[in-house]
Amino acid sequence: MADDIDVMMAELARDATSLVFLDLGEALRRRGRLEAAVRVALTGLEQHPNLLDAHDLYARVLADVGDFKRAREVWSSILTRDPRHLGALKGLGFLFFWSGDLDSALDHLETALATDPTDQSVVQALMTVRAAAQEAPVSDADGPDPVFAGLDGAERGILLVDERGRILGGRLQSVVGADVSDRVAAYLAGAVREADRTARLLDLGAWQSIVAEGEGGNVHVSAPTPESLLLIVRDRGVPAGRLSMLAQRAAQAARCWLEEQQL
Amino acid sequence: MSERFVRALERITRIGGVQGAMLVAADDGLIIADASMEGVRGNAVAALAASLAKRFTRVSKAATVGAPRFLHLQAEQGTLIVVAALGGVLVVTMGGADMNVGLARLEMLRVAEVVA
Image (cartoon, rainbow over all chains, first blue to last red; front, side):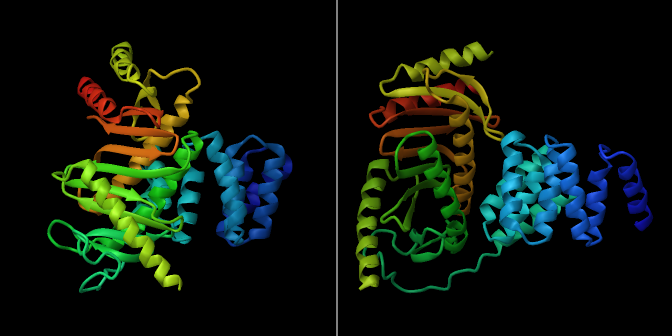
């Protein structure tokens, strides 16, 4: 390995425009020689400012030295120019995973896998992230729910979470009675952030509600307060109008309970 | 083929309040066929709709109700509706807050059948 590095350094010394800096920078960072890797990456960027792989190398080194913010900026910038750049997708996927945003990590890694289905590092990373999503702790709450007591389906089909996906009240059960509250909550905040982004970018104004109708039931999402999200699940037999009315009643109950908590 | 899809989409765009309708590839958010009014940023609508559908598919599956066949984002000044057709294709419609969602949904389901 050291010999390889010497050979590549010699080649780069002979020809400063050589693309060998990409392999050299990668070899240096793998050996933990991060200062040298930064120098090589920056020199490469000076010679090849439009080469996305050079920016990718720089971002990897930034992540190695713990500058995750700049690494994220560089990888995001790469994706604006090439939305299917494998290195940037992988890099952002790892960053999102380590920051606990499993939904965004899955988004990037799934796109990376679609770009190169043979990349084993992506396959492994996806398995890790999916396993983490599956291992969300199971709620052991029992008894009447303090937020939605008295509302139809309060014990199995209403969930109140904060804007980061932490459960505040309610409970969701699958058709076989398994508690799926944590798993749904883990995905909900990210999904609503995407809805908010979509509404803003398309000039639709602030989002008000989202309805998703699946084979096994309908999901209604709203925001009782700016800091909370309410999700209601009912079977397909419940008409949309009734689901909306139920959501309004549950939202009112949620607002009352949240106000009580602040007193 | 694309022309046939555009003709089908134009049935949606004739509905009051609809600003645009398109077919979108679910996996990468690229436009397959588009019948939107001028001024509608089709590429943005397509990419955001596909991403939104992907996110809510995870929510719905986690809630064990299956992948959504119909997704409706209601906002203060507009509406975005996504209907999943066969073959990884989405029928996407965007309109103002006054859009007739029920009628749009019916026509979108018809387009989904044409795609199938």
